[in-house]
Image 1 (tube, one colour):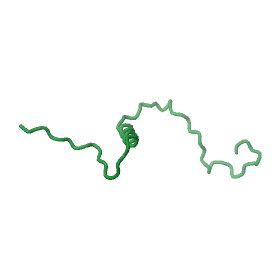
Image 2 (cartoon, one colour):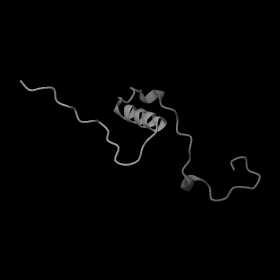
Image 3 (cartoon, rainbow, N blue to C red):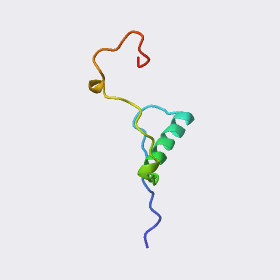
Amino acid sequence: MAGPTAKSPLIRIESGNPGEEELVALTAVLLARTGEPPDVDADDLPAVQWQRPERRTPYQSPISWQR
């Protein structure tokens, strides 16, 4: 029978000495990346609120409300 084997760490710090806050931030990012994206229907997505500059009229009056 083989004895217990040591698992290799999931994360290895190459250089430096991260503080507790930095490790918490790194853990939060890694956990967020491993989660599944939420199921969102196309009807629930917000409407796009930007305009493409090339579709605007080239001249706008200085007193225009669209500025």
